[in-house]
Structure formats: structure tokens, C-alpha cells
Length: 349
Image 1 (cartoon, rainbow, N blue to C red):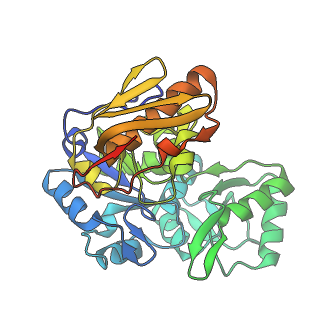
Image 2 (image 1 turned 45 degrees about the vertical axis):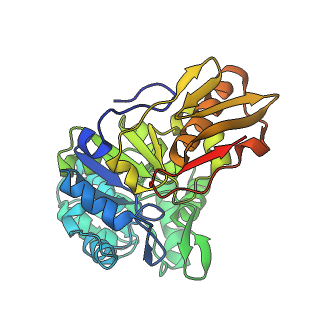
């Protein structure tokens, strides 16, 4: 499915070219307690076009039914069967390695217990005999249990981590995520866990398995988890610009973190996508031209906002692959305001 290191084109709208959209949540479907702009109507239209939706999350603390309830509260159709979590992926990793009925230390929240039991495994406390340990985000975790787990991992207990996310958005600000605990345990024990969540493959493989997807599309707002995860799984990816990725991140993206497609928001599922034309290190698309001169990215012309982002990325990547990193973002490469997919024509000189 994947091409090399540049954006792809699709003559069909993406909702017709793929059978399952694997949707990251925060920054793609919602931000905080609100739906992302155009998300409810875009997802409803994509479903109407025959695209199945799967909501995937690195969060191992919440069970799928609770995640689906939160999505429905935003006006988006979702059932527990539409949700796949890193806890489910972690349980699959353990079940494929261990015998049925094996005991697993659950050093996570309640969201990990249900998938372990569904996989035929027995969750146990950190001091009990066990064949493996699984860790996940758990704000109630006690330091004495972390100490015991660290020693058992160092002594050889097989370890699966639900994810390595270093931060997450809390009501009071950006807070330490499960990745902080993983890093602590890793440094003490010298052991690398098997990681279930993005950008590792198990979560995406579990989603493909559960949905029966033949031509899935990973949709996300982060290059280092969503897009890299899609590339690790060998599937096409759509980057939406409603979350954390900005121009500097996109321009600096290494090949393994470059998306197949770019769109302002989830309306990109309902559009065909043209690939930029590359001439040496100059990229052209939809009236825009992007090139790097003296280390500075410049974009000139006029056209749609989505095409601006696509050509800026393509021009920067072409230069980066041929000559090295882009040094600066020029005044002629200030990104236009997203046009919310309404076809607005903007210009730069």
C-alpha cells in the first residue's frame, strides 16, 4: 500500500478507496470535551459512503464501552465493538505467548482486567505467582507495587507495556503519562518491554483483525504515534491538522513519519487527493509552488489551504532527502488558516 517518502494521490475519495478508517481520538475526533470541527458530520458521511470506522486509543485505563459512550455524547455514532484499545492489544500479545489460564500481574487500571480475562488469562496482584506482567496507566498505583514490579521485571518476568506515551492532557494541564513509568522500569531493570500501543504494531494489527480490514487507513494528528504506527503496520495514513502537528513538525518529518495524505480535518475522508508534482526539489500542486532556497522554505502562488500544506510538505521533504534539513521557515511559508474544506482560495506572494 505504501509508496516511498512522498505524498500519494487517490483518484477516489478516501472513504471509497479504503474499507476501514482507524481513527485516533484526541486531536482527531475530539479535543477535551468537544468534538473536533466537522468531525461528526464528516464521519457520518463517511459511514454513509460505506467506510467502517474504528476508534483506536493508546489509553488502557478506560474500557471500550466507556470510550464509545464518550464518543456518542459528542453526536458521533459508536458502539463498544467500534473501539479498540491498547489494553486489548496487550492482552492479545500475552495470550499468543502464554498458555490459557496463565497468571498475569495487572499493574494497570480496571480497563486492563477485562481484556485479560476475555483472552483467557488470570489477572493477579504484584506479589502473586505469575507468568508475565502488564503495565498501564493507573493513577491509583502505589509506589510499593512499582518497586516490587521493577524487581520482578529485572529478575526476568515477561513484560508487556500498554503504551509509552510520555504525557496526556489532564483537566489541570499536560500530565505525566504511562511512558514515564515505563521509562523508570526500563532504566532500573535494563529490560525493554513489548509495547502494545502506537507506534508499535499490536494495536493496529488488533484493529485490522477485529474489523477484517483489507484496505485500512490510519487517521491521526501525531506523526510520532499515529503516522509512524501506520507506516510500521504497512498501511496508508491520513494526517489531519486539528491536533498537535504544526508546520515545523511536518517539514522536519523523517521518512518513517511521513503521511500518505494530508487534510485540514476529517473532511479529507470525503475527498480525492492529488499528489504534488516533484521536479528536483521543487514541488507544485493546485496553483502552489514550494521550494527551499538557501535553507529557507518558500511557498508561492494561490489555491486551497489543503494543497498549500501538501505542497509545503512535499517541497521540504524533497530538499531534506536530497540536500539536508530545512534551516528556516520563510515569511513566504506562513501557513494559511485552515479553510475547513470549503475550497477557499488563498494566495501568497
